[in-house]
Length: 501
Ligand code: NAD
Image 1 (tube, rainbow, N blue to C red):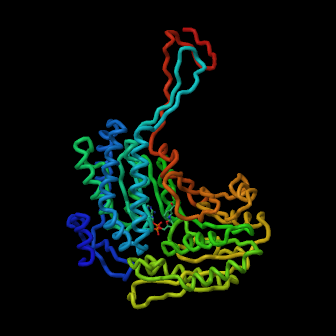
Image 2 (cartoon, rainbow, N blue to C red):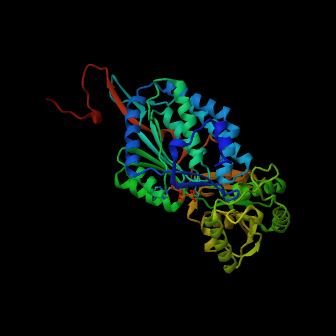
């Protein structure tokens, strides 16, 4: 508790009303207990959803540009507290400070995006077949939006959803990962401060936080008052949330596991490719949904690239994530370490040749799990390669033709992010075409990790098909109304039907 007290003071946050016994917050940096919090009971979750529903009934009547003003004020709070919130993200997730700060910047960026959006939310007018009629489409607020988020982006994922939801006229009920409750509390408190500055137009209860484990998330997914559930996490979780939503015919946005690949073509700029590979594969200790996990290298450049990769991997600074020289922090917990070791054992059994992967920095304490990122040369795309292991393991294969590389690329159940490094225009176009990468994100000369908020984010197949953040992702947070207005003074029917009464 001593360690986080100064940080919470900088954020101006009191933990008292969240404290309890059953929800510990630990830091993966040294495994130390930061504090103990209280999970919400099912009754409390239900009550919070009820409050969010009441708040939304008022909020939807506030003009959208005014709703944008609240998000603008929240962006100001984030700017003022970026350093402290970024540190808290690092403390609770173990990602390096630059990435903790980057995550808060992403929140600021989506707030800016949402503020602009609040003066748009465009509908359409459509040519009517009837004389003296106007046909149009308008977008209205949807209702209560449930956000279930994962540990690895403990603040940004909420903001991708919430910033849009608030300008769209919705209220939000957030169930963060049980591994990162402090980050969620901090964000909730900063948002409450923005609401206080905004004044009485912001109804009490607009943003609700429910703390607890999977059961708490399931309670949100099952509640008939939640119009949309946006769930980010494992494919296992997504299947359960999808079924809960389907049972009550509610909307869902699913942002689930990835198994992202890169193709390095013979014409690639290898210096650039190398930087992209290392950042994408070991950033956040391989615990990003967009982390690079499979690398297909053309046989002409395979040996040269592998030699440089090995050298870089052996020298990677792994250690305390607050140290500015560190590039790889700890894994989130023991379960993550064990999953990594199990995957490496499977890879070896399936013919893989391994470099790295071992536990290091034992002086960090018995409950901290630092690992050297692993490179595994594979003879074939075996079953272990087709699974997502949420750890810094990069599988490598040698390819001869782009056709072969693309076939391997798409032969996994997940479809989140992908990239090709090539200077051949035709290869780049093929990769991005209908017959190319089957992922939601397909990049050229950019790694698969580190998306900007301006584009729609999400992926296909077992990644869940959801889209969040930029482009027209906002439409999922609103309901569409089709309106026909008759100013003709007569009543012609559509399809030319005659119905004389
Ligand atoms: P997780 O699935 O264990 O937990 C995610 C969240 O879901 C947590 O808040 C958890 O309490 C909740 N949850 C679990 N079971 C639930 C259920 N049955 N009903 C409702 N809620 C439930 O995932 P994690 O370990 O926190 O995160 C890692 C996973 O998240 C990886 O698979 C990663 O690829 C994925 N992820 C995906 C994206 C994306 O945008 N596609 C982004 C970040 C993380």
